[in-house]
Image (cartoon, rainbow, N blue to C red; front, side):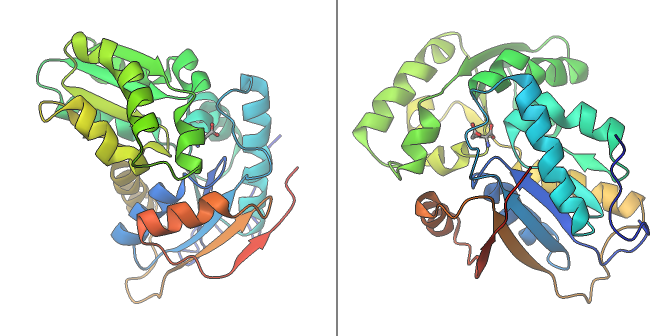
Length: 277
Ligand code: DGL
């Protein structure tokens, strides 16, 4: 299957950047794109009907990723950002092979940030079960520096706690301690927030990890990679364009949307709903 964006003219720089996540968490990446690339139009699809992806099989995650990418291409996306660690871990290679537009995931930018940050060459990675089982972060980190020791921990309870808005809560603090303490005892000096939701727990994670551990997430690094791909391919929107963001969800569930909107300081305006698949 080869998927092509509507219109076929990939040099049209005013087309939107298509961004998708399994749900709302990818707005952390969309916010970084808005900040770095204000002239760009962002078209964001959150697959809220089928979130979470993190406990699903690789085949299902890949199928969902193609279905949502098709929605983005129908809007004329000039580049696709996979703003979901789970989909990046399991589907980016297949998307890159089959789509006719550039694809940028969040794993490589996060890995690059971690390798740049670590002094002791001991890096912790937290993410969903699917992300951790895929070992995508280990591969991406070792491609940059094979001598870095990686401790990866699946944290399946964190996404539901975040979606409940329990960002500052003793229960969340206890869960974080249980997940992080073994890797902290192993001496990691850098912690990769390998899930788009986790930046919302930055304060609580930082409190547990302590000042000696640097927290890195992919959002800003992913936005930097998007900027360099757009520039290299002649796809960057002219500076005088008025950018913006449009959000489409596959289910009108809004509880977590409001949590994310207030935590990220985003005004998402009108949100529409479209069925995926
Ligand atoms: N967006 C997912 C990720 O970054 C987390 C939520 C899910 O499990 O779908 O891994």
